[in-house]
Length: 272
Image 1 (tube, rainbow, N blue to C red):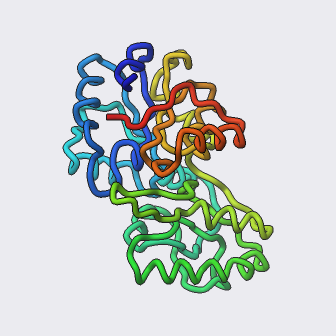
Image 2 (image 1 turned 135 degrees about the horizontal axis):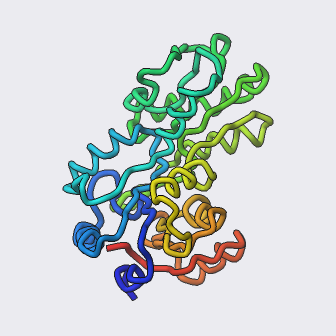
Image 3 (image 1 turned 90 degrees about the vertical axis):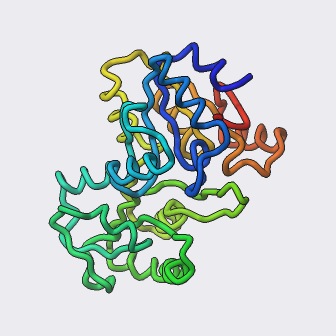
């Protein structure tokens, strides 16, 4: 069975990006053709990503991959959800940033100032690890500072609940969710934005203007975020095993699903 065989029974798709559509550097094989076919069939596509970036920035990345903006309904990101929350709510004016400086623009146009010591901060802004070696070291070192942040009572805003991503080459990188889970484990307070949490799904349902949930399909490669999120939101799901699970056997994946009490509606090796 291919994805397009499944697609005929649904009208809208919440598609994960990294691990399903691309690996951060290139589209997976067949993705462009599959997206074109869905558009020709007037299916509604929302890219639902745990990218800690503004939606407009992700749209530019997609355009660079050859995915035209008129071929999908919208992009919903955890970074955009966090930005919009901060525009309406206050976590304080000064934040300590955890992540790559290239993602600092998620705070553009907000009345917040970056500080460089925990003692100055009102909250932690966690966008996660980076593949850049120098910044990777800096973020690794931050893990050792988390207890001090707990002692200071600093809340953390996590703009990427993912635990891991994988590239086509097989390289694997940890994400912001690893830091946030550790912060919670040692007693810190975390506000999460993105899958599997309800805020981004409700926004998608609003964009789909009351479409019945049995006509909406969530697609992703992570049990922790994509499949769990679809289950919580009350929609069917497709687990793509060619992303972070690509080194797992079918038996191992089945065992992971059982351990997590998750049953994806469909399981496929790739989206394309």
